[in-house]
Image (cartoon, rainbow, N blue to C red):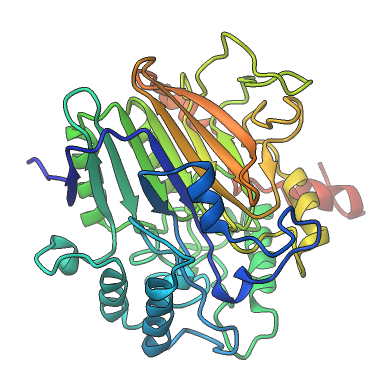
Length: 431
């Protein structure tokens, strides 16, 4: 059965795309220390001037309701924030999928109440036609297609919230009675992964590696969409990260069976790039540690560089349009945590130094430059002044093409790494 894209733009030959996530009106006017913009970062003006995009792709968290509203956000508050986004001429949006904050509650998944009403509010925000099938779906997953003949680009937005089951230790990030709930949630995710609790706790606890992210309807939709795609560039948008090994953040890694299923599904899709948001920093991740350096140690672009997606799945995360993990109060902890979990990160993506880590902790947005003549494209992450800080090159005809053994060997988030730490400090530990 063929399932058509939800939106078609056959007359747009896509060459310039911008993307990003995590936009807070309250943070937008604040100037972070060390910013390049003395009057405050007007991020949309920077994006328009730097990229001149034909389309902008939200990768989650288009709004953050006011902090004074503890717990899950009331629907009227959500409506108000969406209206502020629509009528503020310094802001912009085009195509998108939600994450937890614009769904209505920090770290929330299938347990969030009133999902249908929240979905409808989001679709109204996007001005989706009333006759669209999206109004009837259990979730905000959707697809969009640009171009025709040999110049097609397809974008697939995944809803990682509607059906997502609870974490092994349920997050208290939205609990109004728990101070610093989001910090505690980070710690409990780390404990879960570091001790490999799903392998220890009995199944009746609900803490298993089989917990779900996408519902079966969405899985069938995605499988059919990818199988039928005739696009040269296939963009899969997941609000949460797929490839990260960092256990502190929400990611597919906390749902191992679902993650492996998605890796296998994407394995032979040509011209693929995965985009994500959520984490308040930017980075480039890959399923292999093979060096695909785009610049040398002096920052000069290298010739004959290998396409990042040849033999690998590659993910570019851009998060923090208006705030980032380098700002209070996480600031001092951000880089140490990222440095502690480097196994998933692409080597050589830093534009300043090909040997530096491929991450960036300031405010940022992403872009994709498509070159139809060379059948290639390049993905960048830009700082809040528009300068490219991370980059990777892609080929339209390249696929990951990993074996089942390779996919099983992709670096994991839940790996029991804390047991080795305990072994070094616990006198009763027996190797």
